[in-house]
Image 1 (tube, one colour):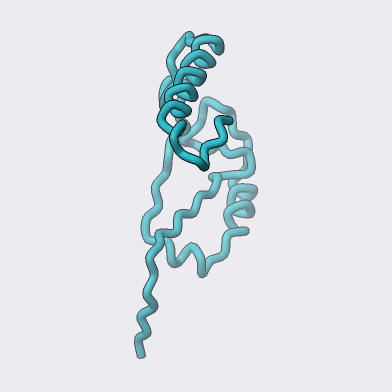
Image 2: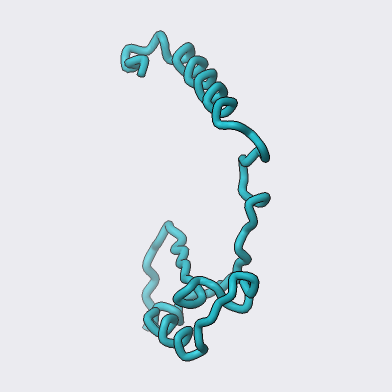
Length: 103
């Protein structure tokens, strides 16, 4: 017998590779966890749950240069000016709306 249950979502799971969050993929961080410690750590995840995971993607830790929206050397004062200008533009767009409180 087969039953089909409709679902409109994607479940994304994330798990660290070991208690210190570093494995062979992150050798530069100096992981010193034993293989037994890693097995025990991953053993906390339910077997039946892991059996239902179809795609497993190992990821590398991003460097600072990989982070989106970061402009190297940008000072806080420059960012504050940009935020203030954006708030002024937003206030101008919303000025005619009764719900706008001008905050």
